[in-house]
Image (cartoon, rainbow, N blue to C red; front, side, top):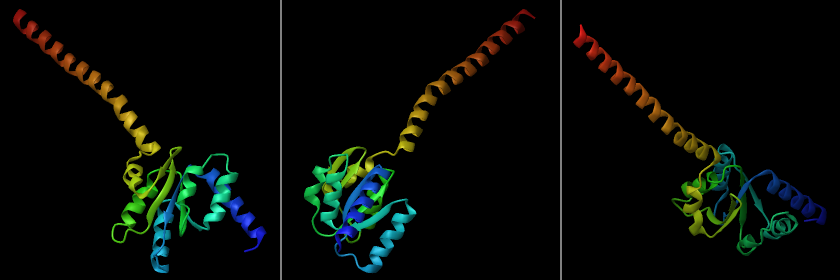
Length: 173
């Protein structure tokens, strides 16, 4: 590979690191062409961009980045694919589902929610990360709960007061 081509690849990877909020480093060793194609289709359907890269080029990209990605460098061995995404837990769920039968692809490391997750044992932790929309929905539900309780209490209190007044009115009549 020519030096110009390497520089171009490093530049593109750097742009993708800036464009996407999260990325996963995945070991795809052992995937044949058909399995790799199927994985790429699943990634595309989930909004994940998957790129197979040379470890040395990825390491040089990390060196040039504004963020210190040094905790990820030790896992750059073997065949590495990078999964770029904007929702932190989507690739983890995809890796878990796709790897059920064969264990491939296997998680090497991830950068999600501005944190580093190194090792395949972090997959369940990454699956449990809530997306921005999930957190917003949870907050809205929590905020609505007290309001619903107040409305319910006022509604039932109104019925109670109405019933008391009606009873008093019948006694006086």
